[in-house]
Image 1 (cartoon, rainbow, N blue to C red):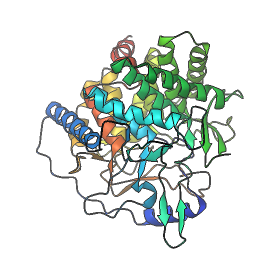
Image 2 (image 1 turned 90 degrees about the vertical axis):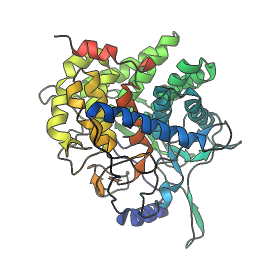
Image 3 (image 1 turned 180 degrees about the horizontal axis):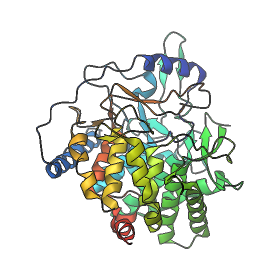
Image 4 (image 1 turned 60 degrees about the vertical axis):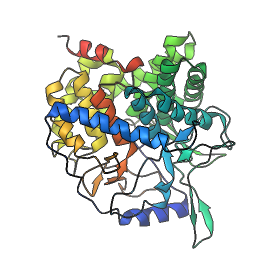
Length: 442
């Protein structure tokens, strides 16, 4: 899930009104296309092969061999058009996942085109020259010059609008962009990707560390240049992402920032573990100090087990927490007491269960995930018409107004590939062995 771990996407003032109106009547839920019954292991292979084909086709459909960014959502068959704010949006998190998934599919050339899109975002921003990426870019082939951001023309007001979250920069998204570039560097040995990953993590190190306890990397920056709003909350998920990228960079050089950054992020993640409950809290509140212990998010609960494998044995009770609080409809939901299956999170759970040596618990998830495949080959974000997260869209929200809808989703498709392939996106080479070995020690 990105990038909604705490307060999240918000819009321009007028854009917020348009988005709220569009999502007030979400696309009509359509039944997933019938899938012939298949044993779980066969379903896993069908899931991987079909999703790999879908991602490869999306990249191949864009002209040339240059940089691309893939759209994050598609309209549901027979449903309403996408809201204006999503119509052209290619979220960096989804694209990072897609690129890593393409490497797991054995298609490094396609992954490289997405990585080139990320490099373009870092080096050809319309305003910033400090090593950050935006949270989203305009979907499609990336043209020469400043990389376009998504937006829409509002005919009644005769104005162009941009989503304030999409033009901002979340720390976790920057780290995921670095993880993609590191994975592509490993597959190509092209130094540009390693150097740009270092640039991205250097931005996190310089711009987002907050030393007040619990010290950690903050959420990032929200809104337009030149003075976006600092988001002082600290996310377990974002610091997991940062830890993995810092640690990976440390394999390739002796820059002290990488070791220091990894240590800082890891200490925060450790501090978020609640041994009495056997779970991770999602982070802090806006003040950067007070724990936000009410909500439970599946990704914050599970990602530490595969991103910090050396501590996975002590955290394995997080699997029991997730099963007892997030299980629903044969899969897993976004939050505790969920109101429907979250496809992306169900893929995450399948991957972590496999990494922790609990393959039997992952096996029933493959037919469920396969059943979420849309005619286009992407997986629906949820089989339900709408599911809640219990989180807010952004700092201007007055209610818990962030939902997932029944839409074909790039991120859900990529996580399904990673799970089916057994590919750990936080570890060099996608390896799982370190996690499983540690977890199986008594």
